[in-house]
Image 1 (tube, helix red, strand yellow):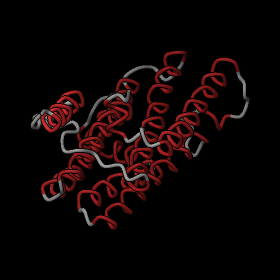
Image 2 (cartoon, one colour; image 1 turned 30 degrees about the horizontal axis):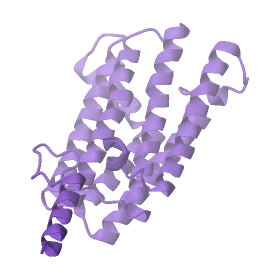
Image 3 (cartoon, one colour; image 1 turned 180 degrees about the vertical axis):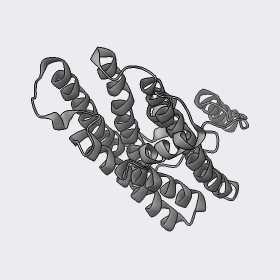
Length: 252
């Protein structure tokens, strides 16, 4: 029996489930290599560190984000839905922000402007910058959502939940990490949860968009709805009704 999460993400489609399995395997593998590198020194290559700019995990994250932006753009054009264009723009901005390190650079400018004492200036500046850009992008998604069809509104609700989890890893845990030491086992664990969690969740986003684009998956209007829709008769009730009709037809 499929769970609600499997149904919502379209993972009952075998190609989407297989893709998710591969993407998650890569994310977990990178996380494992980062932990063994940090604690055991194996492998020795520093490129497996999550915090290393242009390291292997960072490049994989770039690829996942680019796939998400591309799939959302394809869906926007194929189905003429502005809300999907908004999601494509959101993932494209996330990619540009990570690739060009915009939030780190703007955080220094913001922290200097509002005179936040060290060591709190950088995390506070990043939160302010990401809150500003996130609000602007979500406003564009909200406008598109207003004019979207019910099935694409439902798909947007799924994407919104996944985005919230991404923000929890990329902003929430990053802020906690920024307020603590950048050395020792705690630093390694926080990096694993923060950056490893981001790559893992991006894989889930890509698999969901792939199911929408190429597996014919469609989120129902009841998916993650704020208010429940009208209840439909269950399978057993439908069977009893059909059998009752047949019995009346054969009754002498």
